[in-house]
Length: 159
Image 1 (cartoon, rainbow, N blue to C red):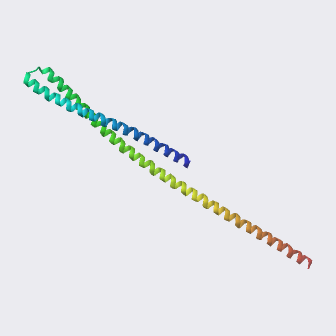
Image 2 (image 1 turned 90 degrees about the vertical axis):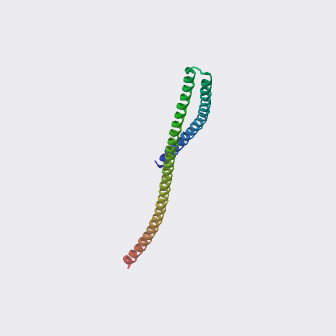
Image 3 (image 1 turned 180 degrees about the vertical axis):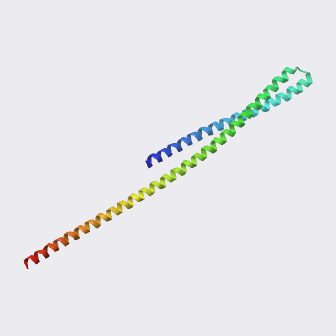
């Protein structure tokens, strides 16, 4: 049962490591996408500024400004979503780290319990061996005593 629990803890640790690695890959992908969205936001902001200037200079129609404004709004929304995902990923990493530490602690406790059981087994074997030796010595003494008693009884009967 102890070995099974140790194996379960090891499998859980491996699973947590895989999940952590997957989350790190997602994190890296989110970082790249965040940078892309930041660049898109900067480009859109530049476009918006350029459009505003062009619009003031040329007195363009309001429709063009609305399109640029929508693009900016969309980029800001994407950036906000990316920040939310980043926070979720951080929280997930914290939970995984806590789970990993708990699994490591449990593994350590199981290892300590295993060591204690092995020591207890070894102690019991030593006690068993000592008792068997003592039993053998007592049997030898009983046989010697019986032999001596038999010879004394024969001497007494002969006398």
